[in-house]
Image 1 (tube, rainbow, N blue to C red):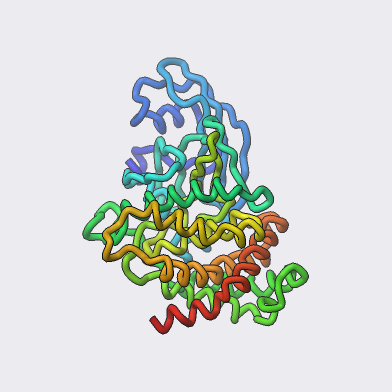
Image 2: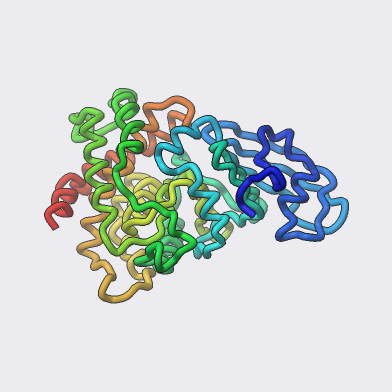
Length: 361
């Protein structure tokens, strides 16, 4: 079903290769009576990944009126080096439940030798989803919804291993790999220079390598037990808000096994204005903990959770300074807003002291 071979569905080299016959085959497993009569390319975005929306008309049978396709883009070697290339297609192909709102997947095709894949999935905007980015922060209630969803995900996979969940045996534990560090060390100094006028002096006193060293220290704590299944890239740009303020999560390309806090801290800090985060973060962390359904002996206390949360600002700070230092990954204003939020949290929460406390524990 998921691997590309000569007698099976192929990854389209270009969106023009998505024909009615191709789409009929892509939908056949879930809509076996559907025969697509026409496909219309609505919009395409060939950036970090290749993305496109297609409207579908049916010669017979029925299926979704619009689908969203995601395939690998120009950064395939970078994603392969970081260990992220096939995570999202492998996750959706596994069929494991994800008890947080996310796009439904109709078909996954993977071309491992070609470092490519395509996922045919639901277009969540047809359910009224409102994709967000840092220029449109969430309300506190919306972030609370997202945290409850993450708690459901984390609870289901609390303590999981390859033995307990064989279909997820490929999921890597979080570790500060050299491959991941390489890009951070290259671009973080540029991001620091670009964002210097918007960052606190407690951040700009560091050079790029020192910022990445903080990231390394934080990620080194994420492999401690109990681990869980992490979205692992739960920044606001990978979210959407549904009518009724339920929050869903897109782009599962970085999925990892590790401590819950990486999702929680990254999502919470980046999704709120600085003032809203300062006002509500303790209550929001309690909201997440209350929603966590895990064995009592492994349930984090608020005090322990608060220390981990404070340390988590180091992760987002390095990621978004690095992204600010690149051209083409994200718009400058998006990266700058997130670098500002994680920089402020780094200072407010005394992140470096929290890292030291975790390292001594």
